[in-house]
Image (cartoon, rainbow, N blue to C red; front, top):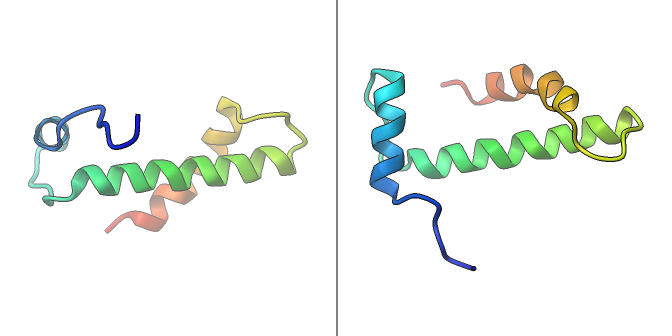
Length: 73
């Protein structure tokens, strides 16, 4: 359904803050979603270049370190 969220924004912020043990920005849920979308896009490209039929755990693992390093601030 369009516009439906998996978690309320406050809940996502509390979960991330508890795991990170530091302050997080008010738009952390948006940033996490954008990181996820970009990671999946990179994994799709990696899978196609590797001749795979779809995204696999291997293609995600290959691009995870590089993709997350781009967004580390």
